[in-house]
Length: 82
Image 1: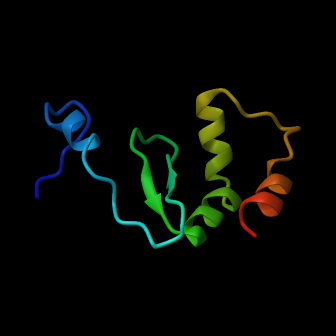
Image 2: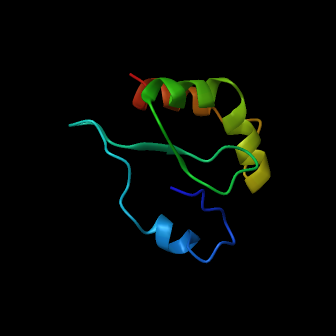
């Protein structure tokens, strides 16, 4: 299967296709890495690494929504990562 990148005429059709399979009973997890235009399916462990490695903060800065005073780590640890 060829690689379809943003700007390719088939890009939108590819995005509207089926999502990758998900484990039974588990909600799919997606991240958008800094500098990327694509959502990437990830495991819970990869999601944790995304938040704790600083990539999440970089992405928020790109979007102009980063606030040094936000205590997102507390929310993530209590409500999301178990």
